[in-house]
Length: 328
Ligand code: G3H
Ligand code: 13P
Ligand code: NA
Ligand code: ZN
Picture 1: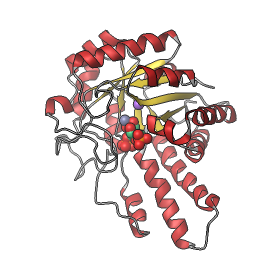
Picture 2: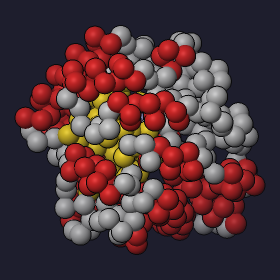
Picture 3: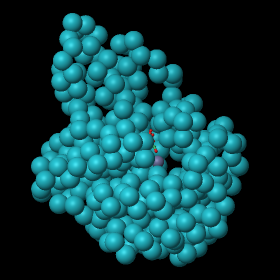
Picture 4: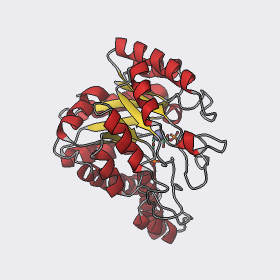
């Protein structure tokens, strides 16, 4: 059944677990998540970016998610807009049946320019008023995602801040977070502490200097009842990098967010953990392997099925590691 983010995360908080939010763009990714959820008895957040809505066709994507909810009636399913950039994007998502929207006002509507507090709080407040009137939840974001190693935003996959950021911008200020939740009424708050989107987050296994989990602990101390969200939380598994590279791919050496750091966050109020890159890597690894091992193959189902299965393995592992399993 479809439920809101608020309902899902309230349950997670009560029971001390987090829910991974997986990005989907197509049927295979949707089925992979739902199959993994059914296998582990987990509630689900399926999230679609503006890019996903454009790629799959807004109505087709909305129909797909509704179909998944009907095909898996026993699994609580939240349909979430990832990184909405304004009132209209959030409103059309709600019209299409989304039960939750993210208003990312940490950047201006261009998705590249860091915004000031007044802009962010103002636009997020307006979205919250509209969404709550429709019975829909809202995630806001305070602080700009980017690397503490380089000061750069997520340029790798074409979105995120494009100017060099200060440590002030890259780390959410706990006092400001408290004010932001009061000013906006958001149901969940995404915070910045050194993660970034995509495969190239860290040039080494991260320590506290480049992955500032203590910021989450500070925020949780001030806002014990606020559901916190970690973006850019793929772990970028070394074994997937190796499979891709051994079948003709070219992933440069890189590190993601270790699962044990996410588990540390879950002990401090993190209830939603955004993951896209790990699933992209899993599907690509399976497709490269399948097509390399049998170059005569040309039926898409022959490589998309293993891709779906490899993605489902990642999803299952995250459901287990975050304590989501058994809570559907
Ligand atoms: O925000 C980042 C997610 O990985 C979605 O990426 O905008 O390329 O669909 P996307
Ligand atoms: P990754 O790129 O680390 O998977 O992060 C995804 C994300 O934050 C989507 O909003
Ligand atoms: Na989101
Ligand atoms: Zn994100």
